[in-house]
Length: 323
Image 1 (spheres, rainbow, N blue to C red):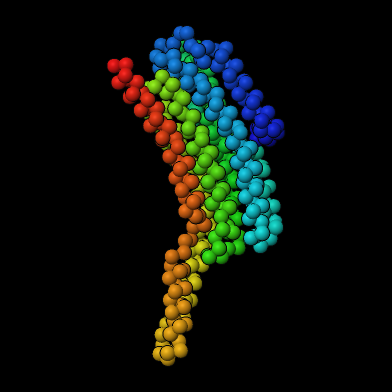
Image 2: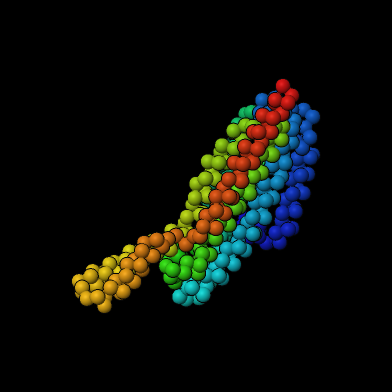
């Protein structure tokens, strides 16, 4: 399945997904429902329309993200190549990233479809539905959406593992962290991707009614996924940096003690230099992230909650105006 998805250009695959899903929800009457479901989802026609729009836009976005994240990860591998002891390390990582979807599609599909079952009504409810076209099309859309979520997450886990392995061998300098910052940018790409997917969720509140169940399960999946994809690429290099920092501090402390043992005035400048260098080491980070990168992560993570809060505020405003 992985090779089939990435066989065609991103624009072709995304456009085809948009057209096919739009056709599905148009012909099923879900985009502009005349008859509303009796017991499932909502009694609001606008909410049904919003759900259909979400199930059109989000899968198309996820398909595009598969291409974009893969290409970005390959670019970051090339940025790390000069810091790697051997070219084969970069070549192996690039090969792993290119084949990530092909490698992970089976377990990722199973996990995605299993998650999809939590977001559809029971089969008995669908069988007794008075609006089967709407209910079945939405159930299909949820399954397809979570299938793509599983495939994307599976491929990104493979990518994160590849960067984690590069972190075990990449050459670094504690005082020049810019050289290994591509490891951190790998996770930043995934944070932005997840935030972008969650930002489509408020479409389900097109009727200006905030429903927590539209967001709860997605948030339960997105939070651990975000932490995994953000921290895993950095964990190996962080451990190495922490070990190197401890080693250098131990050496400097030994030199400071030796210098202090010699009370001659000539050693005072050297002692001051060593103390300054120790202070600089103590302040040095062991995570290859900058303040700007942390700020971006924070900004990306608050995009979906801000969108949800906006939907709730619109609902409250309309209730007060109408009521």
